[in-house]
Amino acid sequence: QVQLVESGGGLVQPGGSLRLSCAASGSIFSISVMRWYRQAPGKERELVAGITTGGSTNYGDSVKGRFTISRDNAKNTVYLQMNNLKPEDTAVYSCNAYLREFNGYYKSYWGKGTLVTVSS
Image (cartoon, rainbow, N blue to C red; front, side):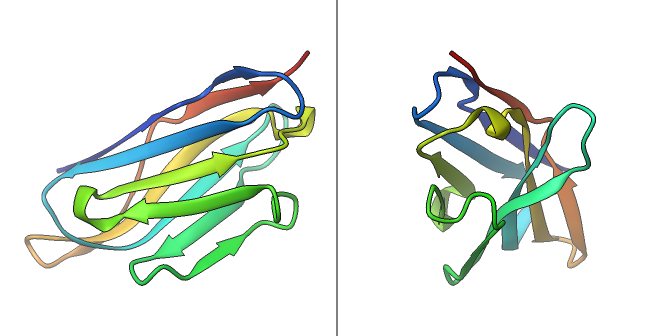
């Protein structure tokens, strides 16, 4: 089994910064893609950012220029640096990893999420 655990959420004022982390552990052979999603109350889940093993990244339009995704392949960890936060960034942020397990199967796993609240 595989577990993804997010950390780093909290309350921050508009214009502030937060750094989220998501660590994957368990029966992991390799991780192809790691992504951050978010879901605000009453809204659908949306992709925030993604990063491949080689470091290629993509971002949702609403966070381009403000958020930066990175990963440490040796630690099976992905990070999301969030700058210039806005109230509309308030959401539960969840980590997703598409990975290959030691048994050879590819699967997608989700973390439980971490709440980010942007408010004065």
